[in-house]
Image (cartoon, rainbow, N blue to C red; front, side, top):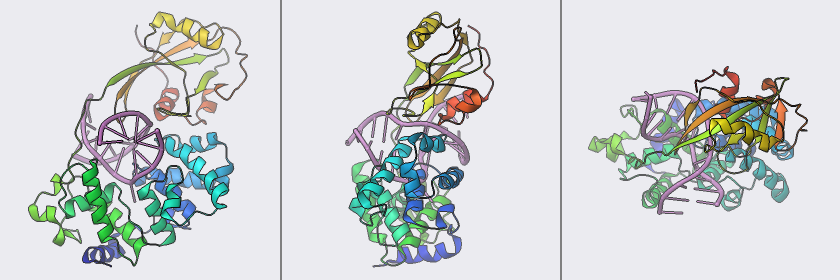
Length: 354
DNA sequence: TATACGTGGAA
DNA sequence: TTTCCAAGTAT
């Protein structure tokens, strides 16, 4: 049941939509799926180079399922939300084992795959299979909150439910693939967060927020909370050959499963770092040299990263393990490192005064 | 239901 | 400089 909203949007899309994104080529469920996961909370321009490199390395779901998880994480390095990469790898194995390598076309079965929720499942159904399904991502939320003047923050269940209802109402039976792309394109290029271009908008005629002259009131803003401040030590343990120690982070939590510098409890004073490192390594370490630290802001807290360099005086006889590796810097950078740690190892560390 | 989870661009 | 938030999901 195609309503006026969808018709106007589709007409606009034919002329002004984005028809040439990388995942629009050689379209199949695997490529659509990977693009949808990468695009979660991540802008198109950020995703494009990652998508190209990922597809070159993992052309099919079988390549992904058979790859070491470290390869997947290294291709995700810098993209953020690393649980997406771990889930993607796991879901690829689910597709191979439970669905014989073919993506299911059923919404419920798609949602049974790790990392695929309601909206992503619908996006795959519409984009890859051309079947009717309703998405509700950040773009659609903003467009519909304005079009129907739905008050409140979209994080509230009641608001979200209303938006899902509106999204379902507008979803057409024909051209669903184009429609889903169209409404996202409208949100990304016309009905933008700030300064929406309502003069260009194909559906401004029916837009309640536009009629009220209050487009920027919708959707309601998120209640703000102060971000906690946290502090941590990151130690650069370097042996006489210029190799540094990398450790794999725990599988869950921030930067889960990524390689990074060893982290020490901020309760240690600078003079206790050597002994703490010796305990962890079983090797003798020299005096720490503090390096200029920096504050890194995450979604919900600030982290003061205080690096310290310590020479390892004995020979580093520790064999490479699943959790620890001694590598030269260029080798370390080939691992899946968190972005701030990557910069720390790339830019020459400056000694800080103590 | 609320919170955890990254990064870079925009304002 | 700081805040906001972008093709959300898992817990």
